[in-house]
Image (cartoon, rainbow, N blue to C red; front, side, top):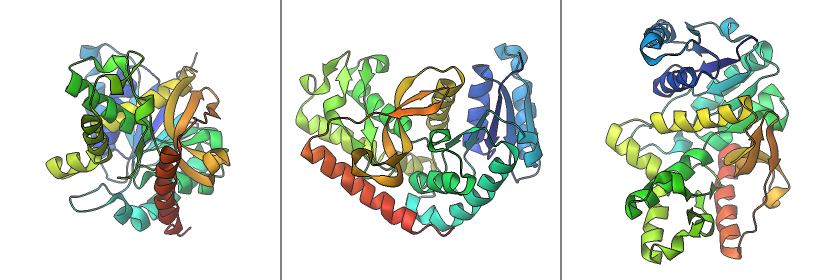
Amino acid sequence: MARKKISLIGAGMIGGSLAQLAAMKELGDVVLVDIAEGVPQGKSLDLLAARPVDGYDVNITGSNDYEATRNSDVIIVTAGLPRKPGMSRDDLVSTNTGIMKSIAEKVREFSPNAFVIVITNPLDAMVYVMQKVTGFPKNRVVGMAGVLDSARFRTFVAMELGISVEDITAMVLGGHGDDMVPIVRYCTVAGVPVSKFLSAEKIAAIVKRTQMAGGEVVNLLKTSAWVSPAAAAIEMAECFLKDKKRVLPCAALLEGEYGINGYYIGVPVVLGAGGVERIIELELTDEERGMLQASFARVKELVGLVKL
């Protein structure tokens, strides 16, 4: 049986981490593509040499030509300008729209049946551009944000409680910005509501830190995070390739769900071989719904800046 093919557009820090994770999990053969000459080739050669030590046998190639991505099963897009200190995700809109548009045209040309995961910021606008330009059905174009934001929320709860991250579930909805919506009611510790373990003040501080977590990393590293975003996107790719039917928060195109129509925003979805197989509508309180609407207003504003 032929191996699956995973193409990574952008061979920067996230691209390299994606390639390593996809290879180590043996999800399929990996192709790294980047406009920077030598970078995808060098990273793929470096990763190839790790295979005997780490014990996996997939093929890893690097190229500056999209021809190498032909007939990909999964495409993960990270190409674009990363954030620098003092920049919001919004500052990236116009530059990254141009980049995303040209990538989307190549994706449509070379891999018309691919499942596409977008990581590039500002996420909710960039995944919108990808879907619009490719014309792919909504179930095959999705944005990675909620998995990462929820992982950060889970991390901070686990750190506070001294409890395994595996026993903490969380759901962060909305746009991938500082007004994302961690739904505290749905955060549990081994099935028990987190409110039974932490005070309202502690929870509020964790919610705030989750919302600002990307910026916290940028301020320390002077560039965007790369290990955790890569891990989150690979989890999504694995759900598709292995038909896992996991319930994960992802940026999906809504058509009336949550009262939103025609925009991408983070909601819980079932991810399987059909891509986004369904959207799960949670029962939200008035306050939660208000927060989601406020987050959506920002997404709408961002998408309004997109010139296609």
